[in-house]
Image 1 (tube, rainbow, N blue to C red):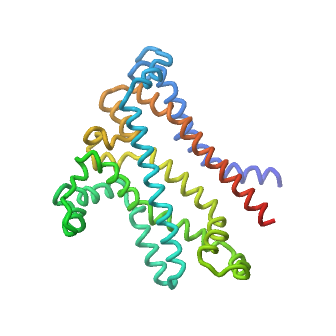
Image 2: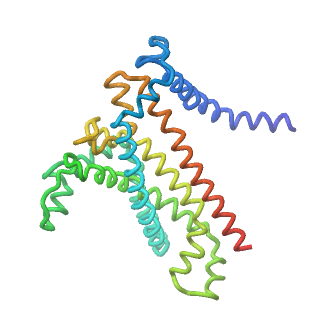
Image 3: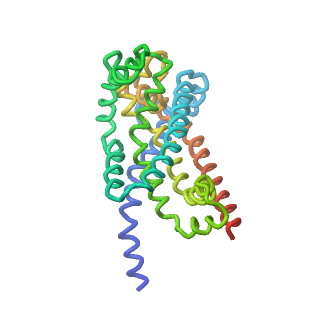
Length: 298
């Protein structure tokens, strides 16, 4: 019986670990090794140790890319999470047939390939003739905004693209979490208060803590992995004055445009501990919050 159980575990988990090793662990080891060699492929260049990492300290564009990516991630989080809570709450009050239709409509942008989505947004942001200027800015009496050339609004355009793509998906996750909260918690709260804000703050928000933590981590990882959307909108560059230079875009430029493979590998490896630390800190706060709320309920 135990042998059959072990075979079942190997059969179920084996493909996952095989893909994990082939498509994550092996490239990671290769990237770490590549970062210690001269700016060429491993086996062709000389060993340079930590020179690429030391050079990053003087690379202003690298820190500009990290700054832009961090602002992009923060802006996306501050817009998507509150809006998803509002939309999910609105979906709760709809009839089931309308709810399914609206959920499908909200999920369509997230199911669209990033390159196709970026091309659609190119039509929206494209200068004076862009749909955003023609339908919203100019009819309201404003001057047309050059979304892809003005360094003051390039990041805002990327954030709007992220909101359009992921708002429906995050709303779907949050709404599913709301439906999983037992109704007896709301019924018990009616004894003390009937205010909608109290129901949200004392029942809904604690019940969604794990879902919101997942959404938070998902959006941060997606922000630091952004490439195709920024590539199509900005043509593979960082835009005017590098206002839209993202981390992965700069890695792409360094490796495939300038041939600095070792430097590009060092950039990715250098940011990985910081990103893992942020995600680990968020998971730790989420666990502490769960323990506190669990203790208070007990």
